[in-house]
Length: 322
Length: 301
Image 1 (spheres, one colour):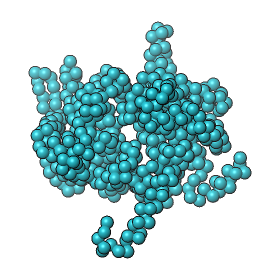
Image 2 (spheres, helix red, strand yellow):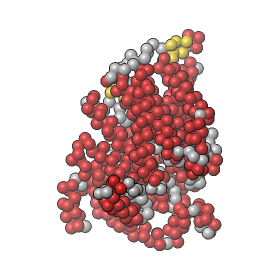
Image 3 (cartoon, helix red, strand yellow):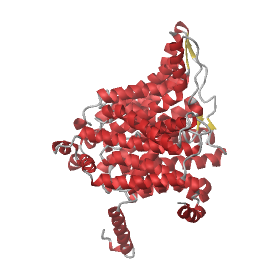
Image 4 (cartoon, chains in turn cyan, orange):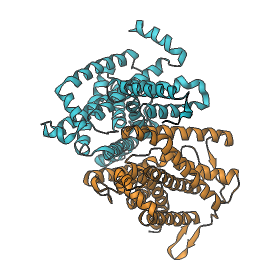
């Protein structure tokens, strides 16, 4: 793996992409796929940030407190996110569009607040159970968990994404994948064709949560520190931007979108204080000119045509013909 | 009991700010069917323009206030022209318009941050403390102390809301707005200039958002380029609670969220305040997805 990675990093380093940046690009790519799955089944869910938080905290506790190896913590974090997705998905997935988006943002906020107050809640529960004052400190509220071992390595992430890509191609050709696409097109028609809409939607929601959980475990073992503030509304919106900027017509889109958006602030570092302005400008211009996202051949050819027309039209502006 | 009434008054003035802010979200949503996530940046600009007018140009408050509202309204129109109209013309998905509004928000916040650095050499500035006489009005019989600022805000906010209601229901352009919200194509067939209505809606939304931002600045005195983030989620919650695209719903939602926040701070401490709000939101969404005052999707107007 190093034989490929070292030369790749040698090429990327001059434009500002060091190994840690690459690692975050890959973690965010997993998150992009996580939200892509729900969007692909016609669900506008913004729950990925909340499930990422669950994965991150469960994974970090498993390696730090219980000395589990990373692969076991990864499975633990994914399982925790998946299990919690069941009771969340069943009632909320009846909602559509913006209502689902808001409900899932609400879920994310509740997760964040529960993490903030987890120690206090646990302490007061233990105090009433045992009848004496108990001090309880596990996840440290707003201060976050510190000193998580940095176990995630770049090749773990690359391997995970390769396996994920293989599974996604298989998924899209499968009966289940076609059912997802049918639900996105028209839920009522899909139900009339005999697709169990509730089952498919909930399964997709669980799969999306499991992926977000995995991204959480990986990122916790990269950053060494996790705080609830890192998984709030902003993160949920960022993840959505990964998928939409990349384009949701294929699974490659969200991966490209996540990597571009994560790399951009680092690549633009030479702009110094104008970096943030440029960042927003790029997002705005790309989405306005390529509404279908970066990975969308039809959008590029339409843009190409528009540019071509503008060039042939510009030498003779006085003709007055539109 | 005294503190309860006292907190109630705080909740009402905070609710007035939230309601004004949420109205802007609700109006754009009812006309375009799109969430304008840059509305929080417009809110911040209201506070920022107010700060510049008072602190840099030493204008009195009554003059700074319309400047802040007008400035925010104009930038909001700019949003429509730059971030929404081009995408609508290309028949882009609504979700693309959501992302373009996020891009616009990042742009606005970062430009403001640059200007802040130029003027104040930091990303934070304070309005003068003696802007409004700060001696509280004491009502002895009830044991209340009400700050004049908060009274003023509630009064102005209520006036603005009544004016808006009048505009939408009684004035021709307001009726055109409702027609466009009901069905764009039919409205266009009846000779309504739809793109003018869009611009007008964004202007109104910006004016109200700017007013809310200015109030926020006047109450807390502290203005940063990031104050929009404090209210972005609250405004969304307010319109969902009240009913997406419903004007009375946005007002009710704003006051409800403020009330819940203040009272859960009183009862459970500040770290729980948003949990209570979102728990209620969750329950309402499950029982009554169209919100408290919203109508089912097909008859939304």
